[in-house]
Amino acid sequence: MAPWQDSRGRLAPLKAIAFAALFVPAAWLLYGYLARTLGPRPLTEIIHASGDWAIRLLFVALAITPLRQILGWPGLIALRRMAGVAALAYAGLHLSVYVADVSFDLGKAAREIWLRSYLTIGFVALLALIPLGVTSTDAMTRRLGGKRWRRLHRASYAIAVLAIVHFFWQSKLDIREPVIMAGLFLWLMAFRLLPTAARRGGAMLAAMAGLAVLAAALAALIEALYYNLRVGAPLARVLEANLGFANGVSPAAIVLAATLGAVAAGAARAAFLAIARRPGTGARALAPAARA
Amino acid sequence: MLIKIKRGWEKPESAVTPEHLFWNRRQLIKGIAAGSILAGGTALLGGDAVAQADPSSSLYPFKKNDKYKAPRPVTPEMLAATYNNYYEFGSSKRIYEAAKALPLRPWEVKFSGMIEKPFTLGIDDLMKKMPLEERVYAHRCVEAWSMVVPWSGFAMKALVEMAKPLAGAKYVAMKTFMNPKVAPGQRAAWYPWPYTEGLTIEEATNELTLLVTGAYGKPLPHSMGSPLRLHTPWKYGFKAVKGVVSFEFTDKRPKSFWEELQASEYGFWANVNPDVPHPRWSQAQETVLGQDEKVPTVIWNGYGEFVAHLYKDIKGEQLFM
Ligand code: HEM
Image 1 (cartoon, rainbow over the protein chains, first blue to last red):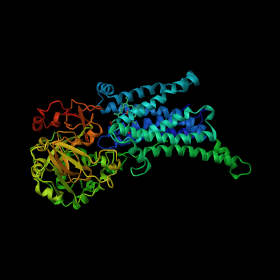
Image 2 (image 1 turned 120 degrees about the vertical axis):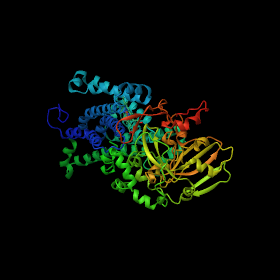
Image 3 (image 1 turned 60 degrees about the horizontal axis):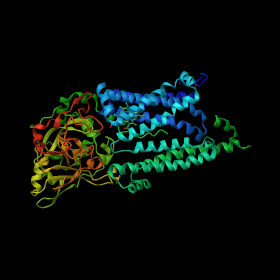
Image 4 (image 1 turned 90 degrees about the horizontal axis):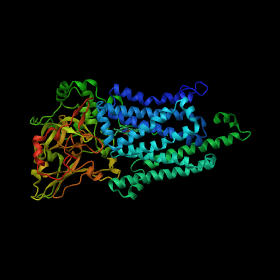
């Protein structure tokens, strides 16, 4: 089936929209490159932007399983493969533009990747993404069978860790985004630690809300440890900055807002369905649509 | 789930140099002198407003000093003014607008430490005492990009002579302003603000070392470190401390901002050398702003004849980090 179709070959609007959306960043970068709107070092800009999109899409793929349960939206599964393959594509673009940036000197690119540990880590992440991409065709999925396919694709957890490390390591001074990524990663992984039986209903929502607070706290701790190890900043001082908005919104606060926001959306939907299912309410007519 | 943080380059198209400015350099340079070709650009750069509000603007352009040659043509002003590292105002290169929040007058410069008599001088009085001139120098950033700028300013040697350091003074430490109210980066209290840099007295009094007040024949835009910044063309750009308010003469080697943060990547000496890589990237080549092709980086950034002798007798130091 084509990326915009469901398993019966019909047009699936959600998939079609998502598929088109995946091309937007690349198209934007291509336009910017041709129109010279990317500033004085366009290739560097593309390297950074494509790296950002690679890791974001990897995270979208990792978020699908928890979000299906939390939002009560099983249909999201249709987007997981697409997001994962797109992450590989953006990572491929990322490496290609890196090679272009060293004037297509493959020897130099290889030497640099070998010499600079953060590039080596990125390279391992990219290599590891390749088998996941290759096994994402319909035929390969069928050939591997669900169980083996799932086991193989658990490598994406480790790849995400490598990508986060690469992200941290390439940062100069600003580690907001990698800290946010690390916090979100912890929360997405925490869901997978819940016993299967506990992955539904109000108890799951409550657990994920608690884990949201924990993930945000750990994000703050990671940030503080980073500055402590790198600059010797007192842990308390960095942690304290999370309590106010003097430094702008802290990365931990963004983690908290994003994760609690997802839980709140799931809770709102569950509450709506509970009311809608009660006999005699006007909302009842809407319920089937919400369930779809 | 998608965290869309606006990146620096997502700017309106108008923020970009028109193609002809990239390529028609001769006309561009003439045009800057005539103040004409950038008319469209200056409106955007706010150059007019800044220049008029600046009490020193009538001093420009300074007399040209052609003794020092730059390896390439002058970088379009638009690029030099809008692609800057100035972490006080943000961690992207696009701090041009944010940096405008810094009030440039009154601007007191403090002279302290091992000098005959500590004193403070307003920037305009300081400029009156200094031999103002314009020099075209290359600027090589540690991030492997470079530009060529007509800098206006004065030899740091003249400033050191005015300060009358005592015989024991070996270094000059320079500090940036401290004003977290207008410089949001400085609110991250765990960084060693204010930005600090230092030179040996020999480096500070080398004929190349320039204290910069302007560029392109007018006062510096905020983004480039107005009203006073350093330029040592044979060193990586992070030595070029911006928004300077203090010169302290000392016998102890100052620890610079980046050295404090990551001594293994950014050292005290920071002399340009293509053969000594940054731990995370090669320094063999550099991207010239506004140009697609990379060019090879040259030791001492090409200024060896003036400075290599300074380091002949220094042993056991990481001169190129
Ligand atoms: C051979 C593989 C790779 C190479 C050579 C590579 C190279 C680079 C380079 C040169 C940078 C910019 C560093 C700087 O300017 O200082 C970067 C940044 C980045 N890379 Fe990679 N990378 C690779 C793989 C990956 C992979 C697989 C991912 C994600 C899945 C990734 C995500 C990122 C991210 C998020 C950034 C930071 C972008 C930003 O926010 O500025 N990279 N990478």
